[in-house]
Image (tube, rainbow, N blue to C red):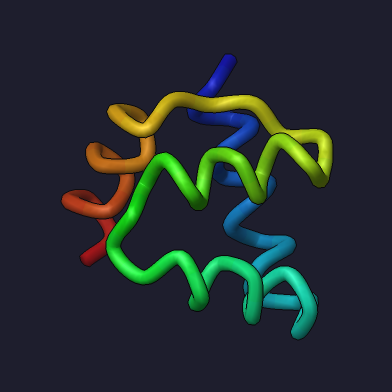
Length: 57
């Protein structure tokens, strides 16, 4: 479930300048990115984000 949420959120990041700016301000802090995602209705863990980054980096 969380990977689907993460994929959906990352798509929104690509298409929404405001969300992209929020994520970029987090830098490499995955906990910060998870909090931004939660504010926009997406739930996943920092570990899920790390795995996603390895697969898409």
